Image (cartoon, one colour):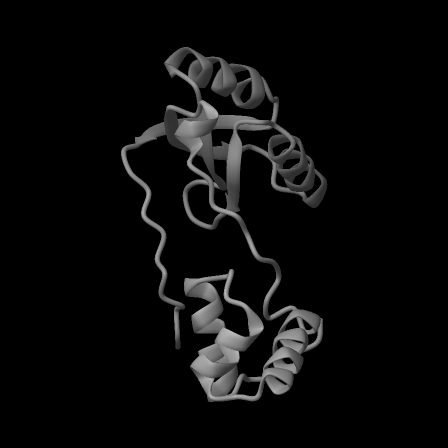
Amino acid sequence: MARKQLLDPTDVQLLAHLYANPNLNNKTLAEAVGLAPSSCHERVKRLYASEVIRSSMLQVDHEALGGHIQAMVAVRLSNHDRDTIAGFQADLLDTNEVVSLYHTGGENDFLLHVSVPNALHLRDFVFDAITARTEVNHVETALVYDVQVSQKLPHY
């Protein structure tokens, strides 16, 4: 994998504005960072092309879609080969319940953010989609009371 080049302060400003509001039009974004609209557009295109910006995502209200319960499900696997990991990820990401999936280090191998209509659906999802898998040897479920997404770009 090619090493990513470091971003200059203008690139970081562009990212910060787009992170806070991905719907900014190019003219407004250019004005916010002090660039000509054409230069701004070229920089944003370059950020996409170099995969510094990987996508723009829509955040939805899960409750409006019927997801009245959200939970984080920690999963520990008994087998950690690449095929097992890839199969687990692909299968779980293909379900309607999984909002996001994190492959983690430490005691648990995965954290799944799930959204379901009710407690019975959560129970059935955990039993049918997770614990029924032969490679799964431990599952813990924690209810999510509230989700807050930072509008500030992490800057190092």
